[in-house]
Structure formats: C-alpha cells, structure tokens
Length: 345
Image (cartoon, rainbow, N blue to C red):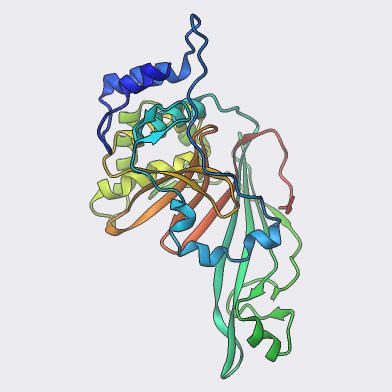
C-alpha cells in the first residue's frame, strides 16, 4: 500500500496529480489490499499538546491568532512523511481527507459549534491607566433536514489583558458592551441561550443564497463543484477575480455549510487540484489538537491568506484563521443529538 502511494504521489514539492493519478490514489486510500492486509499509512503528527480547560484554553487565544506559529508549528514542505517513511504530497493528504469525508456519518441535524475570541475595543479604566479585554464566546447552529434552524450562544468569561492596570482600576468584574447588544462583559461566563429561527432559512454560499435542499443537491463531482462555486462567487459584483475566491468558497463546504458527505469529499478533491492551495505540514490548533495546516489566498487579495487546520484522519476542520481572527471549530457535521444551549463541556 505505502509503495503504491509513493508511486502515485507527485514527486515535486507543491506538485498536483493528474486526474488519472488522483483517481488511482483515491482508490488506494479507500481500498485495502486483501492479499497483504497492509495497514494504511498514517501521517506524522507533532507531539500532542495537553488539552487545556476552557478558561485556560481561551486565555492567550488572541495573541495566538496573530502568531503563525500556532498554525505552522512544525512546517515542512508540501511533501509530508508518514511513520513508515512514505512521503505524501499535499494533494495526496487532501485526497485522503476526501475519502474520510465521504465516509462520514449522516444524521437528523447539521451541527456547527465554534469558539470565537478577540480583543474588545476600549480602552477601559481611567485615563493613563487603561487596558483592553480579551473576550470569547460560543456559537452553535443546528439545521434540521426540513430546514428548521436553531441558533445557540454563550458569552464566556472576559479577561483584562493588563492585570496591573485592571487592579489599579479597582478590579471590576463587569464592563459595558458599548453599542453591542446583550449583557455586559463579565469575569464569569454567561448562561447559554437557544433560539429557533422562524421559517426555512437560506444559507449563503459566497454571495449565493441556498436552501438546505439546494446545498444537498450540489454536485459531487470536483470539476462541476468548482464551476458551481464560481457561479456563487460571481453573484457578488465586488469580488474580482473570481478564481481568487474559489479556495475559500470551496473550503466553506468542509465545515460551515450542511453539505452532504459526498459534496464535502468533492470539495477536498477540488482543493487538491488547485495551485493556490498549499499544505504546509503538521500543526496544532489553539486547543492543542493535532492536524495539518492548509493555506490559500483570500478573495481578491494576494497578500493575506486564509489558513485551516484539518485533521486528515477524520476530514474535520479544527480551526480557521483569516488575518488576526481565529475561529476554533469544536464540532461540525451531521448528528442525531437534538439542539440545546451551548455548554462548556
């Protein structure tokens, strides 16, 4: 098995397989050799980082957002070695994730749970003795097969970034949110809420509003899916050229939208053929989970990049960074678990 993969994987860093090579590789990934029963090669992973509790895990997430080290921890060229010594190309890794995506379970609800963290505008405190806050929140979305949609939210504990200035300010435990709606920021986490949205909701794929049925009906062929994605992008007259937005639009099908497992697999396969997509090597997300860093251009701008951390063993997206904003994907996929307010479990 590993020797077959080595023959199929492109030999040059950054290379992409031909259609025939990609199909052969996908067959090898999804089919065991009954004669040898050789184990499938697994990707080398960095040493696992201890999983932090919620409060500790959120602290410092903002600083980590601006540091590419959290995403590029052990950056290697696009050829990534496996423990058996086989060098797998970036395209091969994405195709391996595609095979896992196609085998993902389905369920009654599409469920997306994310953690956001950021530094709030301020400053707080008195003049000459000011500080900013690090705030974080949980967000959940549940979409049923019939289009019913629920949104869950929970504000997590806020933390002053300058502890000395905060103490000189009297160590307050709450701060006003300014123009933002909702309760004040607090050093204690808020209660989780769950709201059902009225009617069938349309979800946006780039600039194209789609119903759940329309998302499920997206083509499972990689080339057809790329053409459909370009149609969605061109709905937005402010996006030019459309090709720059293509990787990010395809990537949204991996975790943001309730696409079928076959469509998610096609999105991975499409990304594996694109020169703008770079697999940088093993990395860990802000919660210490191991994966592979994948980067690509943001629409219309050739300087900043979107960066994903993907677990190729499960095809799950673990984290997404766009400039200085980090979104940690805690759960994404189909489930039979019913909607409920966000918890920190």
